[in-house]
Image (cartoon, rainbow, N blue to C red; front, side, top):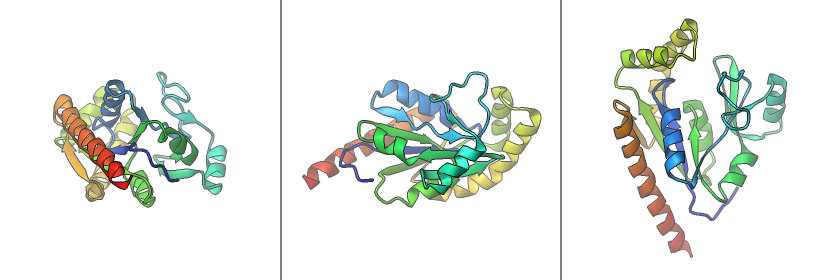
Amino acid sequence: MDHDSNNIMVILSSPSGAGKTTIAKKIQQKYQTFKISVSHTTRKPRPNEIDGVDYYFITHEKFKKLISEDKFYEYAKIFDNYYGTSKETVDQMIKKNDIIFDIDWQGTQQLSKFKNLKLIKIYLIPPNKNELKQRLIKRNQDSPQEVERRFKAYDNDIRHWKDYDHIIINDNLENCYKQIEKIILISKDTSTKDSQNTL
């Protein structure tokens, strides 16, 4: 996929519960140009989730078929379910919008292989492990076993911070958001200048 627009792709990753989805939604609300990339997943919708808005919910069989047809820029199996980013969806979206990817380190590594994508990779980490556990419990979306499982995955997740351009500690949501906003505005500015230089 080649696109000559100035639109950028921002990856937000974090261990589960560090606040990336909240921040992605804040950016989308403030900047009309930004759209959140909607992943395909095989997991069941949570009560407040809408198909096509939060995720495209599909069966394991359908997901495996899409893998075999090379339809994903990235996909990963996380806690028994698959998540993936459709090439077709992204290629259409980037023509008119900037994109935010709310994905994990596995997805980031796969997306990074596509040299034609203008990626800005941001990794959010909670101030400490205890804080993460409190957030997972407060979030109240997962069973105690699921909280424990996500908490255990933290040590593995955190090892991958080196794959990112920016590391931000989310000890305060507003501060964290402002730091990310600054990175995005500088990147947009650079992207515009680059395209003017190539004209």
